[in-house]
Image (cartoon, rainbow, N blue to C red):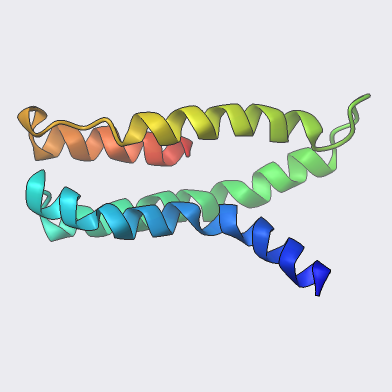
Length: 112
């Protein structure tokens, strides 16, 4: 039972971004004026980039030889970038317009 709970906590972080997008979808689409097509791109493009870069980063981390281990430095830097980009990506304002907000959100989604 403890192993299942530990796995569940690990998956919580993995599911945080899709859940946050679904929660704030109403705000992005209705209040900020995002067309549904742009909303679909916000869902698709970061996942597509992940599909391309994850095997590359896996290869890099598998072949890293460091005194801290193979993955520790990547986890540390990734945690800093992920935390900062998650906070920054939600700082959108209606006065900027939907196209600017789309590119802004998409850019930080790629970092996240």
